[in-house]
Length: 56
Length: 472
Image 1 (tube, rainbow over the protein chains, first blue to last red):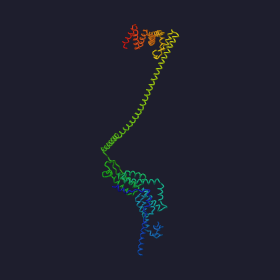
Image 2 (cartoon, rainbow over the protein chains, first blue to last red):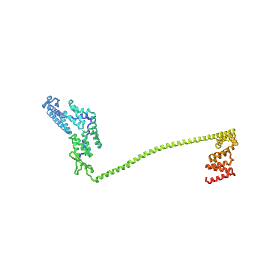
Image 3 (cartoon, helix red, strand yellow):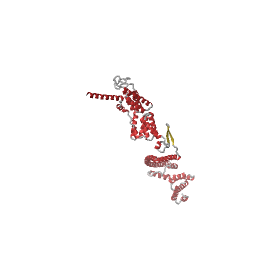
Image 4 (tube, rainbow over the protein chains, first blue to last red):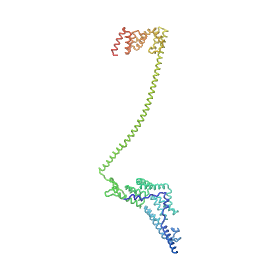
């Protein structure tokens, strides 16, 4: 048996035309390549820090 | 394919020719993104919109530059009524690849039809209002609003689903099923629609007694059995006994009686009241008219009274003038008679003719003494001759039974000579013979009184007794 109240909660208001701009700006566009880049940056950062420690 | 790090064009090797970055993993993700795109395209081809959206979003997570996947995702959103989401995907797509992009066409299609855009916006707003009604327990209003939404945009899946949910909540399983089926026709992979359809079907399936589960749950007085046979819904009327049917007839009769009673107690008094009011208004109007006419009649009566007074005054004046005329005529007659006498004293006929117009009764009392004197003198001179002339004429008329003439002449004769008993006696006889009993009696009385010891008086006595005996 379907619970009306619970089902109703699943329905969200539709976005109106005026909200297009906000939606576009707030959309998370990161993809796998961005994640890779972040990982590479982090890896590089870690390497640089360990090199500096060794030099000291 | 371009290097994700420096943007240079990649070759078939696993390293970027420009920056030397290892792009093997990157190439794999791009390939995987394309695989998801193809899968999404296939799902969209069989209208599994929910599946296609999930797959295409996956493709975009792997490669945000997969323009075909993004454009297709926008198209699916547009098809399912999510126009804003569709526009946002197309705008991003256009931003990522400004040239040679299908998104241009799609956006132009929307932009070039302002009425369509307005229509879409109205649809979205109405849907949100309907959802708001649902949260405020205005379910009937929500249903009405959703029907409007679907009349404007029949492809709005969310509206179909919400309407199906409202129908399920209201126990309207048939309609819920129809709405769920419509949603599934638009999006064959929609899980929510499938769940609603299943719920509706479970309520519409025949129970152990042959009746629908929904019918058993809803009421005990349904007169049809509905069940599904394949894709067809069979609605079969339940056979009822004569007693059950007569119950419905009694219901109709009761309804009619109640209707008549309502008409008598509610409608009729109002109708009577309105008729009474109309009559009252008419009576008031007639009364006002009557008052006005009464006032007019009074006015006329007053005018009539005034006119009568005027008539009386004028009548009096006329009488006065007549009296003057009579006196004047009498004077003229007397002077004419005097003239005849002075001319020829023996012309009795001329004198008689002149004296015809002299009526002593008509002469007013205000005649001059000279007139009276002249009249008396003339009477002394010719009165007896005139009396004889009139007597002869009157007697001849009496003999010839011309009583009218006899009365006139004998009256004149008695006027000029009141000593002749025969004149008075024949005058009385003429009155009697002419039927003028009152004058006859008076004249006989005069004969008896004025000439008591004459034979005429004795005869008059007899005649008077006859008259009295005859009952007159």
